[in-house]
Image (cartoon, rainbow, N blue to C red; front, side, top):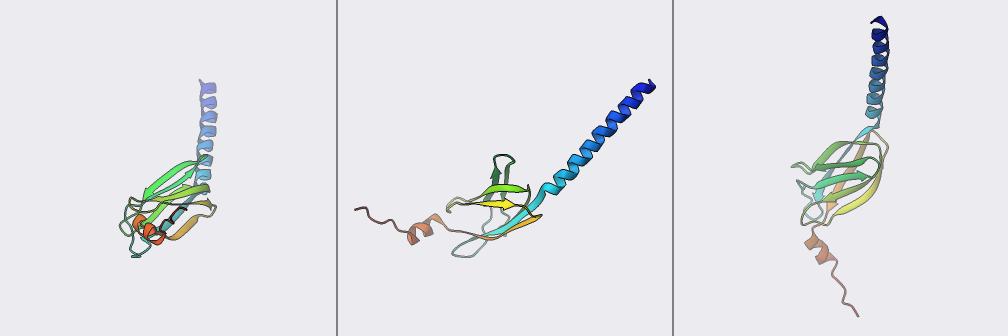
Length: 126
């Protein structure tokens, strides 16, 4: 019985140590991604914009902007494809390498599809 308790205690301590170390490592990988999404013409914030970070090795992080157009969420450090999508607006996508504890994407302007078509008329084909 005494041998069993000693063995169990050693295994329990090792398992606990592994969990603590894994938890500490995960904390070091996290950062905060933040910014604000606005309409490019009116300069007003857009509520409900779908914001997605995707990385094939890490996975996806998805969020929607708040009433004031802001977003702030945790993500692991790494290289991501950042996507902004909202119905009636042109999607915006770019790559971003997150290595710091905080990544501010600043003000992200989105243009309506209507405004884009108005500003970029199709040229007639010859």
